[in-house]
Image (cartoon, rainbow, N blue to C red):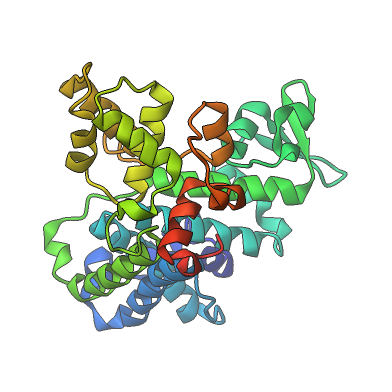
Length: 342
């Protein structure tokens, strides 16, 4: 068993075997002073993911450090599961996946093992390229917007896409991120939570600060004076009892959800519509916001999409300078500089 590889990639089966052979189980991990450093590293994994999408680099020299690193991984997953927040889960999954990518680009000998662990249908070629089944390629590249990732622009033969190794590793990052998102949250027994309370409080406070920073409103709630003309007009149409096309309903719901409005506040806007059906509206709103299926929900359409759908009403000079209705709101509210570059 390679303990260094287990520490670098703690999601591997051999990492679990390494932990089981050299530790005393989950209950001791949560409470024993023996594993205090593993808990500290686990908390750092979550906080790093939350603050800046990074997993801290720790010393992996010696079996002790490697064991603490391996054990920090299940502890971090338990913390994320106990908080149960979708934003935290997604940021954590992305950070772990980017961390794997960073290590794997310098450790090509482990690629085949990662492929097997993630159950990706791919085969390495002698020239350094990798053949990946088109179904997996589509599954793991759908979030990549650049034209180079489109299947039509790829080298495909007999159902397999040929990729340079660096692009293939980038897709492995997506595969690992999706794996984490599918596995979490874990069902953590209530008895375990008392040992986690202090660290959960730290995460909750940091999470609240991140949400305030990311919010287009800066956590202050929606102010009508900052609304872009398109959204303001759609709201006025809804409040006047006009029938809105689906594209307008979608744009409005996603925008208001991004501002932090609750379901009750959103549905109230549609309640005066002549074709208002509460059950149908509830289903549509909760589907769009992700509440029905436990996802993050859809994002508001960009300005070009709003124009294509005939929803760009009375644009003002600021509209000409932005590409997204949320950017308009952020600039108007003075909250633009607070937004992270990502």
